[in-house]
Amino acid sequence: MPSVLRAIFSPHELAVYGSKFVAGLEDLYREIILDHYRNPRNRGELEVPPAVQAVGFNPLCGDEIVVYLEVRDGVIVDLSTGGQGCSISQSSASMMSTAVKGRTVLEARRLVRAFKHMMSIHGSGIGGSGDDLDEDEPADDSQNGVKLGDLEALRGVVKFPVRIKCATLSWNTLVDALEQAFD
Amino acid sequence: MNSTAGGTSSRIGKSTRADFPILADEAHDKPIIYLDSAASSQKPRCVLEAMNNYYETINANVHRGAYELAAQATEAMETARAETARFVNAYSANEIVFTKNVTEAFNLVARSWGGANLGPGDAVVITEMEHHANIVPWQMLAAEKGFEIRWISVTADGQLDLSNLDRLLDGAKLLGVTAMSNVLGTLNPIRRLADAAHNSGALILVDAAQYVPHLPCDVQALGADFLGFTGHKMCGPTGVGVLWARAELLEAMPPFMGGGEMILDVRKDGFTPNHIPHKFEAGTPPIAEIVGLGAAVRYLDGLGMERVREHEVSLTAYALRTLQERYGDDLAVHGPAEPACRGGVLSMSFRDIHPHDLSQVLDDRGVCVRAGHHCAKPLMRHLGLAATTRASLYVYNDTSDVDALADAIGAAGDFFAA
Image (cartoon, rainbow over all chains, first blue to last red; front, side):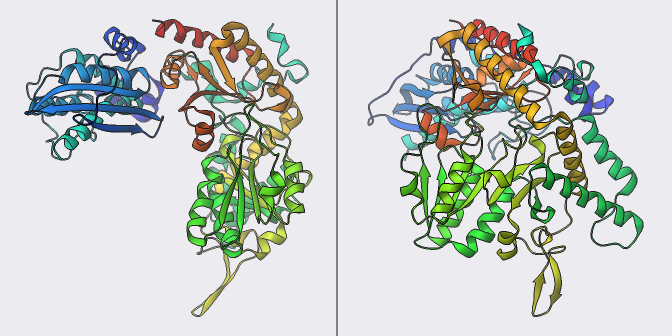
């Protein structure tokens, strides 16, 4: 039991929530995450236009993600990512690219919502408020039946709150790119 | 091998650790290898007890009540001021202004002294290795007052480039410089810079946040005009920092914040400010924290700042040697290579492992370090780095902590090996 929990919470609260906070490296660095980090998919640049380009920053650590996105007839026909960052931000970008490439924009937006829900403390069943959710997202919404597949490997990131922004950086940048594509 | 660090200062290090309750083995599920003292130091029992004793025995507001408790609280606070003044060899205790931290100390100087003295055509000189606390207050004021900010650049080996110092200082009213870089560990030649500033008719403001906790500090010998340091990096509590300035400067400066404590008289048509240092201490001060800072000063005095410095030089040498032996060119420690010319701040880059990932694996082994830009983004840009992993040493660290750091770095290397 991490001692910070003993210092902050009552024994009753610990009995209810305590085990949810116990986390080891293996919760964070799942093998599939390390694989995407070492062998990133869809790395590179696309010609702008026809593609659009969005850049996302994490001011805390200086990480930077570039998302190139080409949409045709409501379908994401091509997507690639660039930038630099830690294993979590880079693998999340790689996994995001494989998850949304070839999907319709509508499906991609649903996936973004489901992923960000999973990345909120509420969505992962740890309790507290889901303050990383979109404003228009009902707090008690589930993943709405969206299958996250390999992305489930990133669920453990929630146990390391300072790393959540690493995992969501590429997804927020994707949202910016989608908005540009429809400007 | 472990006897190389310590030497004549054997009291410091392993045996000092027992003074710090948070570092006791039984306090956590795994041993804490605390290597982030440049961000905030741990607190010895005597500091915690001093603050607790204050609340349990003499708590009352200061400089107000006529009753015994209030007099005792006031005396405790003013004793801490006198001890702090002596610790940095101030000319007098009324040159010690208690602030929240160094950031507030420098905002005080910018708003009060800068507001009264800087305008179009003037210049403030700062360096590329400053903490944001000695950059942003000047940028904010410059946007209002229209003065120029000039920068002293940093050389490839992490030193200030002083080749064009005279030109930069020409017509400047203030030189703001850190005594020790919180990223590179560089110890800057403050006396030389103070003389150069004074010869140009400028004042010198010294960021001693990383200096006062680690080296003997003599504001008179340094030739400083303003100097800031903070309690929580020197075994004291958070919430209390210090602006030291020469009395005649403080006397001439207008008040910073207005309110209680900082006045002699208030009338409907105006007010008369209090004498220094109270003129700059509006509102009820953090009395318990000031008492705690006094205890921290006594604690460091007991260790002896010369011996603290000796301990850190030998431990830094051991760390640089150990990391070089074990990882060679795979690991870079940024900043000066010579331990006697630097502080115990080791900003590292290891292979292509991101500092977030490196510090995460270190944390898994109980090794506490800082990953990021260390609130010095202009310097990080100059170095071409987005982030580094920083380990910093203090009085409770010894060679076993360095060995644990080196082992954990190896574990991270294995973990992220393709």
